[in-house]
Image 1 (cartoon, rainbow, N blue to C red):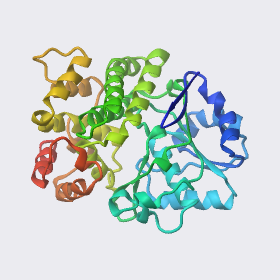
Image 2: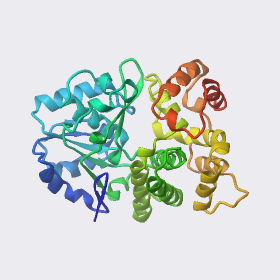
Image 3: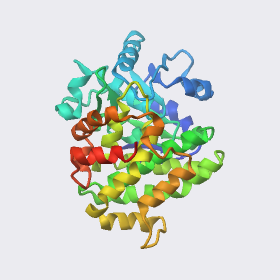
Image 4: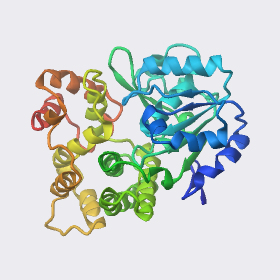
Amino acid sequence: MHIINYLTTINFGAGALSSLDAAMSELGISRPLIVSDHGIAAAGLLERLEAIVGKDAPVFLDVPTNPTEAALKEALALYRSQGCDGVIAFGGGSPIDLAKGVALLATHPGDLESYAAILGGIPRITAAVAPLIAIPTTAGTGSEVGRAALITLDDERKLGFISPHLIPKRAICDPELTLGLPPQLTAATGLDALSHCIETYLSPRVNPPAEAIALDGFARIWAALPRAYADGSDLDARTELMMGALEGGLTFQKGLGAVHALSHALGGLKSLKLHHGTLNAILMPPVLRWNAASAPAKIARLSAAIGLSDTGDLADELDRLNRTLGIPARLSDLGVTRDVVEWTCERALADHSHPTNPRDLTHDDYRSILEGLL
């Protein structure tokens, strides 16, 4: 196991789950709320966690694919009624984001909406956030080291809650927890992580250290994802994939871009329950084509990092990777219809990821991207 200090403390490596008891002690957590989901419980992974924490720890499993304000309120009520003093997030990005919301509202007054980034909520989030330990069971979101939580409000707005105080106090990244992940979920979460590395690298904000991390993560994921997809028991591939996903999360400070502005908007549609990683995978090639003229040197460096020739096209290679990994070609394959296009464009323009896209996209630009995928 390796101890890494960058934004937060990360316990990384096969078997790192065993460090949980010490992490709880160091953070002063004696009565944690475990936030996970029913899939994790059905897979038997929750039993491994409870063997360390104890079976008497309260557990919240009703986490939607895209975490909602309603689910957050239920989890918060359980946290308070059980006298909890910290949170353990155990799962993919949805349980981790919901756990961040619980840690926030457990110590901050008022409605969730008042802390949204686009509504001026960033300075309202203080160091009083309850201690949170994040343990990812997928290699995808990077939320275990990210400063943001994406939560869909009751009115279907999917908003970002952003603060360095929301970064989990400890991330325990054990690739052994991902060995049983099905191929389809391996692909969708891995491509989510790839999109993080691409978008943060292309962001116009100046942060060379973060760019170096994003570039390394991109190359790791590109090489490891097909191997993990083909053989889910390949621990080396799973380890490389988890490190790449972690690196994608470490670069969020640079901001994301149009892929996430659109996927955040589409993910807020309660009627469809769209998977965030799958959306990012579908959106990445066309958005990259729109951005090509605004960041040619950076796209060339991304291409070189995976051995793509000067005449190769990274967007086309992403399309091919999607097909290899069984990702649908179009948003319409997921049930997205033209009647949500205008609403999605409006939400994308208001999203916190929109300003850091390398090209300043308009409402009409977003409409063209979406209509090209229907």
